[in-house]
Image (cartoon, rainbow, N blue to C red; front, side, top):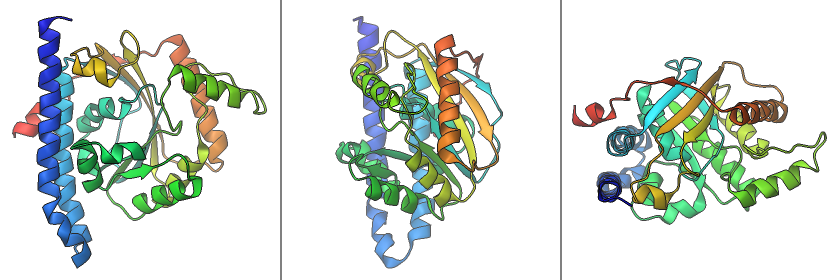
Length: 289
């Protein structure tokens, strides 16, 4: 590993941890407003801090990591209620999607559903709790659905990010997914995506009340799947490719629609996802101005 890569990884980690710590420090004291009935005021304040932190993270990815983005598909509008669904290629998909959200100026409204294990992560977990993100255990189905619905209901503006697969595309998860897919009618054997879980998606749609849906397909120009050790070592994907499909109408049969979309993702990823070079999100300008 070169000295340049090590310095890049150290600079990225320092920026991300420092901004998460600052964000947590700014958010936690005003949280005393919540039991006093100032929930809406705190939510507005938190959205400003979220906008700042996500812009910092996007700047770190694009400037420090020198990651280029290629985006294709439908245009993203200025919608108030948006449900964003995406395939879960690696554990860091949510992080690499932040520059996409920053490009459209909606990072202050971003809401992410995450695994419960991330709740206790130093700095990051604290900030995500303060932002009001949803944490699901993947063990209590009814409890997880309640968490998703309660965290999304009544929020405007809102960009809710959900990974219907529930976990990332590791070899063991692919094997489990294919085993489950073999029991379905007709049988499914996908290698580039996992069989999605429709219940969480349906709960999110119901809670948000007919949101605009953006179906994102993400892929990386990288040697292996991006992960935390490679990022900290200064090895970032050279390109992140994102395909955007917009749907204005809520599907009547959520499970059927979701499976059809995931079948399309499998086809696209198997063929090699392609996008168009995208201008920088100018996240650094957002942070400094």
